[in-house]
Amino acid sequence: MTTTETPELEETAAPRPPGPPKQRLTWQKLTFLPAFLVAVLLATWLWFQQADLDSISENALSNGQVSKALWQHVKLTVISTFFVLIIAIPLGIVLTRRAFRRASPVAMAVANMGQATPAIGLLALLVIWLGTGTKAALIGIIVYAVLPVLSNTIAGLKANDPTLLEAARGIGMSALGVLSRVELPLAVPLILAGVRTALVLNVGTATLATFGGGGGLGVLITTGITNQRMPVLMLGSILTVSLALLVDWLASLAELLLRPRGLEVGT
Image (cartoon, rainbow, N blue to C red):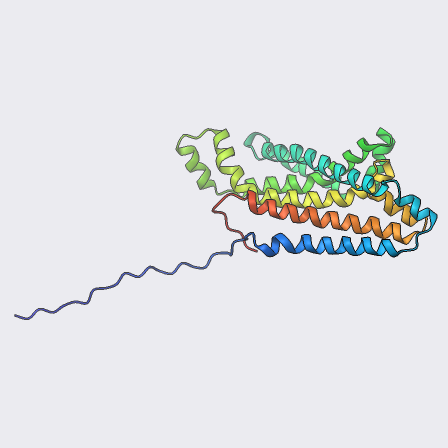
């Protein structure tokens, strides 16, 4: 009696389709932009050491006025971004709740009006209403930067898979638990992208604070333009661009570090 041996079939796992590549924190991302900014600022400093400045330019750049303007600009950016976050993110959460969804188009229309209004015109209206000073400048910057954070918060929460939310409710999680442990973590990538956009907007808009008496690097830019002093204008512009690039770089690192584990995004 002969027996036939059947060859054993080897189980092979089906290849998974390639997913989108993950964004990773590489040494190039950590070092390239800071090294570039250091090189630009060093070259600017060396150029100013050899530049022949007249009395008007020296007066505009002496007695710590450059560091004062830079510090004012940083404060305007940080404070305005803080208020944008505590206004836009909670408002976006409220507008995605069932009881307030009908108000979402109205809120978005108001936010769109705030950003569609020319920043200098909005600042002029606030100065007429509130007078000159930091308060008017901050309100103008905040109104101008609310839209990206608000719209991304709403979009991120609406994009959540309803089956995941139903599953969370099915295991007995409360509405607050679903929001804090499921909805918000899944919406974090879009929210952080909106915050990054708002930060860069705030750096740029803060240059207009000088027209309302709010200070900032706009003082150097307007002084260079009105007095036709190119070194002062160049320094104010280079510092503003460098600050915007630095803020965007820091925000991109925050996007990677604060993103919930397991979420993959395309580059």
